[in-house]
Length: 76
Image (cartoon, rainbow, N blue to C red; front, side, top):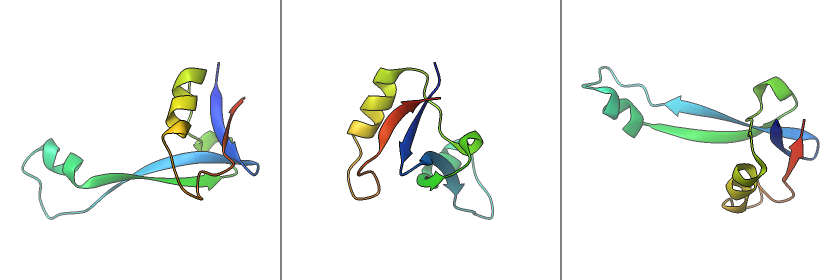
């Protein structure tokens, strides 16, 4: 089963932005300097995919704020 989170006909997508530095000592430095950002996109191919309902509902239940208001879990 493929599940998405949608709001107003748009799919939830995420991207990880890495803060660029001149050099890294090891991979933990990269992890410490990255963060995940979310956006709503019209292209399902860019959407974040969930494979079970419980995980998708738990993910959205933990989110707060206007960005998430009205979002729902849907099947493909």
